[in-house]
Length: 270
Image (tube, rainbow, N blue to C red; front, top):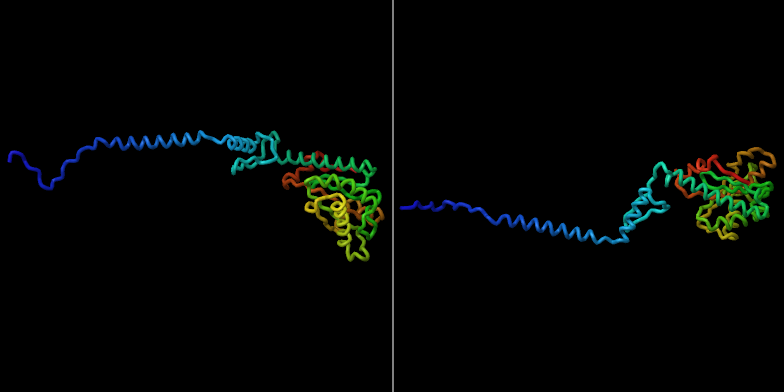
């Protein structure tokens, strides 16, 4: 034979595929197209949502003064304790709370002053809040009685309309002197509870204080005043009392700093 025949089962030589570059090119074009689609979608920003997100981020990093946390449709940025400038720190919040309580105290004193009763109560601001003690030169409660005296009614009529519109919770805390009570009270617990309830009912029924923000507490004779621990008539009368406590609604870490925020540990008047 002039030319050697190829063996019957010998595979043919593979030819190089000169069009393979087209597949890679098409893949690249597809990727570029997807990228431009994504870029286009990102360029159509909801301006309102963007502004809300910007404000929430600014609040979170302490750049905007706000008592609330700004949100942007599900994006929540918690407030941070801010730096040495004192913005939104626990001490700054305590100073603000102390100022609010002092302003409330001053309004109550002004209302009592119009009736000449500014010295009929004691006023104290501490980590609990503002305590209004119904303890004056004349007792608010007679011995073994829970009925309000005329002076107690006058005082409550002055302070009730000021406390009712606020957002504070109020604890009405009844006390009794160390002597055992007589009928109809088996113990000082029932007696002090009756006194606290009398004050609560006056604030709710006469002054419109919301029922959901007030409660009555009985301490019996367990918590006498530090200045009235004896058995004199004056000490006994001083412990026949009710404390109306305007409770601070700040976190524990903030309330603990209220005495420091006041500068002198506590603030009292009256």
